[in-house]
Length: 95
Figure 1: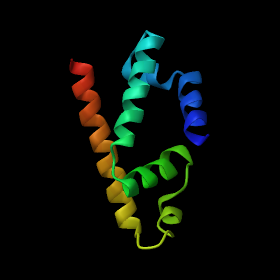
Figure 2: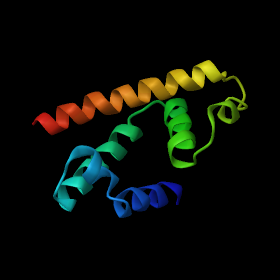
Figure 3: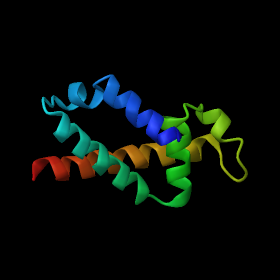
């Protein structure tokens, strides 16, 4: 599973711990689950574009080869997805 591979890579490299200044692996795992939940709440197309970009490492131009999607639309989906993630993480982390 691509998502599991990405998750394992993030956890092995301590990216969440470093990025958010977390000392606690349990807290990092909780953040990871929140991120996955937020991704699941995205529209189908946005989730698909986000996964292709972030989990599969597919360039925007290649994603735009899908039917009915331009590079600009790909960029907009990614911008909005990352914006949603930042807002929701800020909400969860402030509580």
